[in-house]
Length: 504
Image (cartoon, rainbow, N blue to C red; front, top):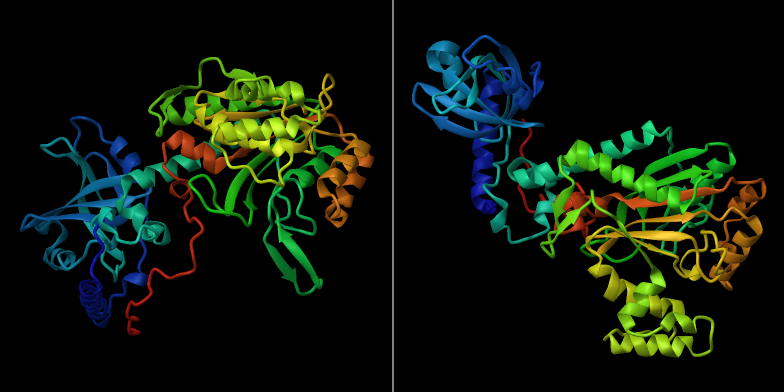
């Protein structure tokens, strides 16, 4: 979309503003008009019966995006939620006055139209308009195409324009909504209860991340925007909600990248009397339903590698340390718990070309190997299981090896899509794990959550799915910004420098 130069844009704004003033002087205000919309575009076109032109009457509405002036008739297209539909307006049908007024309309104006369906000689189902009404005057012109924008952030800052002119972006973000709806339906069919929990927390818990801090004036205390949903939802397990989930916004005061946005959407789901293997079955069901009901296929093309990802086939299961040993070319895992483990891990990471911080613990070094050298290669669905206990203090310890936890990280398309655990429900073990993670900063312990556990939480499986990453994967988007309607941007205004409109 080539950006319209400011002087031209300003001139068009003045012309359109004058048109609005003329309408109001003549006694008509489009912003006080309304129409009935009986059908969206796709619904209307589906009603046409072959060989029965003008048999069906519809009322459609949308934004003018194409205008073809044929002299005494007009072929135009409007855009609504479902897409485009063509309208045909003829001077001797709608009347000379209405036709003259229509010819003064601009691209971007929003109209309603009533008429009958017919098929043109080129085979396009069209509305033969009997009457129309302008219901919103666009005072600014639409861009022609986005590709010429000099400011890449303009697409995201003015998302409303992107949705009007970029059909690929529009379809991708529509697909996101359908994916989320499918997930909700899958969980509802399995008797999961959807809940809402607080965004403001007294303790930022449930994950290792830097929180955003705010101050509550009435309570005289600092609060944190939540970095996870987990601890509140587990309280509900204690309270007798055996199957519970939340689709909620999460906030982490960290970097921005292709896969990271400071504000993002997370699904967290917890099921009593289950475990991490039960979550494997649940996530497969979620993907199966999305493929069947939304995508219409069980195969997608991975944008970065070009590989075909097959969701219907076997999902690989691989133990974390088996992958580590294969990547470093030695039995590094055999040194866990020994004095030489950190040195060996450091040497292995450096041999792979990784930069290691001298203050890192051995588990952090090993996880850097996984994150940088292994995870990006896991294109087909892979459950990576039995991670080091230090990576998650909220999971149950493995019975055979207390240095590992019963978890999986589902990796698809070279990124983690869904972690899941057998949830820790022993309050004494949980307190010790929290204390070890907090170190000297013991005031960060969520003592209220620990108190809840002491009242008894059933064994459970829990899982998180990053909705934005899932949508990157399933829509073939290049960046998380492309699947979030309004991604986080530096402060600024898309309208900076535009002349203010005079009151009319």
